[in-house]
Length: 326
Image 1 (tube, rainbow, N blue to C red):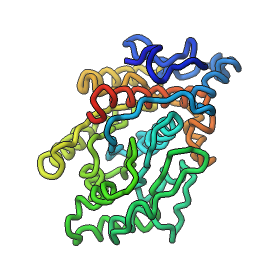
Image 2 (cartoon, rainbow, N blue to C red):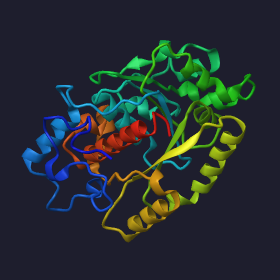
Image 3 (cartoon, rainbow, N blue to C red):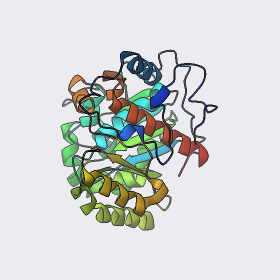
């Protein structure tokens, strides 16, 4: 676990009382601000912002020994898949990692959140899946975030599920495209649609790890068994190295008993796969996409940004501890 001697904490600003810690009793990130906490002290907010934005580039998160390809999946909509993909990618890129985001959802929300053009006619992931266009020809650099690239999704992707049915090796098209990319990234995040169709199967075949965001509400648990069963089928027949490596609890509201109950159920079932960092309900996280930004750049001093920073750091540390893969 990170200590003051780890790469993330050189001489420089620290979080002070809000420092990321992963002890069982100190989940700073789960705090949903009360009426008296809406505006944290200016100095503390400034320290958080400097730590997260890392303008000097001096603060780095450890880089994995091998590229990590993570599929962010959950067939339930509205659990924070795209928000998680965008903010984790930005956090890692701001702290010294080379990151690629593959938007595999026809809605194109990850492209919107990274302010990458994805209107009709823009080269996108559809061209890679159907027409074998190299991924390097459609990946776009994300403005203002060094080392972060995005493969956008346009409305054309909506028809890919049907078109892929008759394509040879239809389940592994994305895997081949990623492996053929001439540049090697530290992290590749694949943002999946809220379904278990061929697009999601492509993502599961291309990935080494699955990251499942789980909303802290009862409905979020209902379809989880089906998702795990599908992941097991892909592992048995298509991708034997696939592993559910990370569970992230999102939209946590400490005011409700239900959130605590869901958290305990998830932790009891998945154990150490569940990140200690928990993402609270935070209005800044919801506002950021409307400005074409992640919460990390929109309001780096907010609790939402702090929470995703903690989650990204924990994922980075786990990658080092496991040699780059789960």
